[in-house]
Length: 167
Image (cartoon, rainbow, N blue to C red; front, side, top):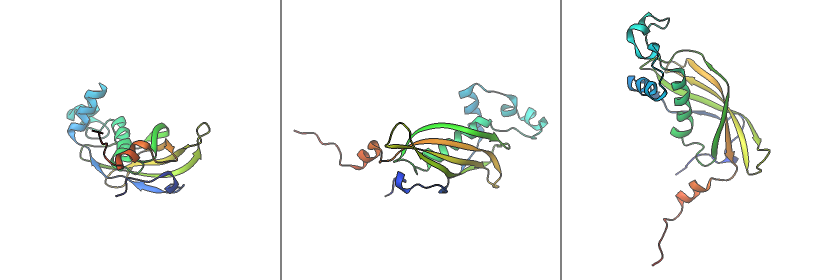
């Protein structure tokens, strides 16, 4: 059983697509509660209908957060290499995400470089597109990730023999 790509498997141009996730009413309300952003555009049907969108929209940051989760947690593709999320550049909110939309993340490696301070680590930059079920890009930008050049010990340990207790 594969647990994901190792550093030596990765290359510029390598493409990925996440599984989908449908945005529901509960997602909007939970995000509003978590962040304190109860803007009527997200929480009021009446306000949403009168807006330029004609209905309520998901928080832009909800889309960004779900994009991150879909890329790294749901796929497991970089389980053996990903150490830390380093940042986002050039992120834009290109279109609305509506209740009932199913979102996917298309992403590909645009740069891999060695870490300047740690020879056993590297930095990969990904171009990222958050798309809806119709293939419309609703958010896009770049994300940088710190990678281990050797399989992460926690992953390697989880594959090993169970701990034994000496008697």
